Figure 1: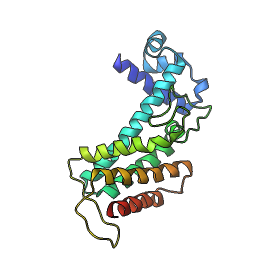
Figure 2 (figure 1 turned 45 degrees about the horizontal axis):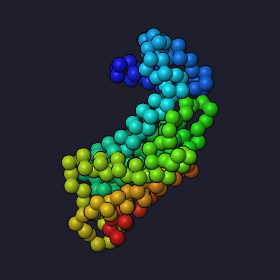
Figure 3 (figure 1 turned 90 degrees about the vertical axis):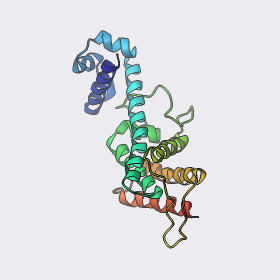
Figure 4 (figure 1 turned 30 degrees about the vertical axis):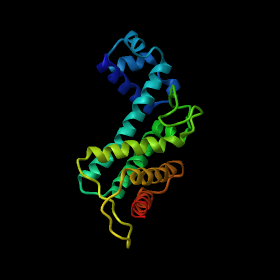
Length: 209
């Protein structure tokens, strides 16, 4: 029941934004979704299963959003460095707004939220989130490809112009830039302008070097 599943996840998300996950009751989630409690249990098996599915959906939406941010920036005429900065802005904005995403990026799960059934994409079995940058890089580069524009590598300020960046150069530059963005999730700055500017600067320099 895909429609019921999504409605139940929506209801669970609303519930956990209003109260700690330990205080969320399955019967209330089912009622908010307009289905029976048995339907809820049939779909997710348990409260832990519901929580893990909610974490999975939020992380999938987060990763997809990074790719969309790149694609939208590219379609608007931004070069690859500015597109990566757009992904950085998405990362910072989403981590600030969504505690579950922030927990997955930092591996700091609080008592107020459900727990994942498995590590976040790219994370090791102990939850270490280091590999997440590579997953974000792949989604971001997929966004470049979906944009319909051939990306043109922008030169560093004062540097030589060049025709364009190859795939390996883009991968290396984007992973470096996205790691910088993730570091600002762990240690936030006041506002996103400085972090996103640093991402743009580093990616631009790597693509021009």
